[in-house]
Image (cartoon, rainbow, N blue to C red):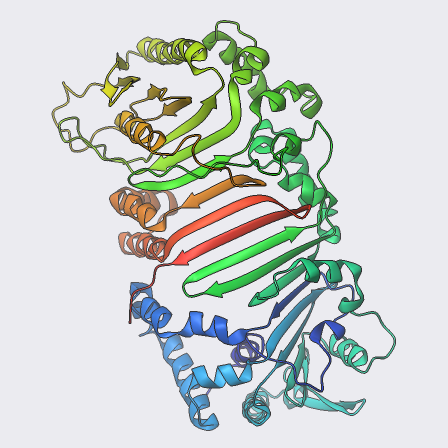
Length: 587
């Protein structure tokens, strides 16, 4: 059996860094990790993650992929399968059961300065762990002898513990049910010294780690601690954070996140698994203060304030709901963005034209409530109008107005000026313009514009511009700016069915994003041929390669039934929660 040393090392890492628990005699892993660890991952319930990733449903989903079926016939894949079968036979157990026994107590992986990595895994079955080590030792010795590097396989006693290396670089030791693995001998020595409670501070002694542990969810399957101070001081990271401060649009959408990271000492992330639902819960200790900070216009001022629930419409791909005080945000633009960018100047000039010189702060944005919602949905095309060759989703922005009756006329005039400017510009280029119409949907009359297809012979492959049929609707207290009249009608229905003020806000949540994977996959499938051609032209792929890549993307997207991201505050900390619902076939 010929297996390269690098492949052996990979299998060692696979088996020993993916799962394990701590025995009663051993200290908690955090008491064996150096205090200067930058990142520490602790998997406390490996079996829960193993059941999700290697259970019957996931196995069927993976093995049904065309990419898996293609790779399963390759020599490397067959060699890997033969190796797994050899290990199963040698250990007398199947790989799932063996992996669960080798990783039942927990896994801790720490990344420390100077590219040092340490892993601590605690097995449920000490005998199985020792037998597996003997198998890898025998294989490593055979491979090293073939290559004339037998001296790379060595062991050494240190403080009553036998330490091994299989390649002269990594170092590991088995102590009872615990495996300690490091990518260099010095790191293993440090861990053994901390385990023996010699001099040296541990991660458990860190005030930041202790605070992060208190904030983390106790029932989490896995947690990640990250010491942020070394990272936020790195020039590339500092540059990104600074750019978000100087970009008005980025500051508005990501308000509070960049500010929190600038002042944070730590980041805590917890993973919870319940059935097919994965939940990531992240917290940082950064404080956001200052009346002119972008976050000051995103953080709800009252305990019960927050973003409204997202609107639900047919064929919805994504929806975003924001709590943003646009008036106060723009009123503080001189303090927030002292340097006048070309983009900001252009925006102000265009708004001055559309709103007939009205003051954008006091006469336009002052008319809006701190409620901004966006919706993206797959289009449903009218056969009589035609179908574009590239099918783009429809999107819309929804604002709630303080005085819709008075401001409605102002918004209508601005919208028609914008359409007129588009038509004027296209007319200069001898291109067809938009035709304005005033249809009604239910009790709401709205304004829309469209490109006529009357003179188009083939309506099955229209130009991309026919994806756009801009519309302005004002149902109740709301202003809807939509890229299509179809989505505008759906939003009129949604806002009239409890999607407006009747919906209670999500307390202390300032941003809520939801994505429907199934609907997104539907859009990708509708544009599959165009995407394949694009990959062939831009990336130089063959048709088979492009089709395989696009099909894999669609399959992966289909596996996410839905995802939800909400950002806000919790007990004075910035909180980010991501939930993903898996969509796996039944076995």
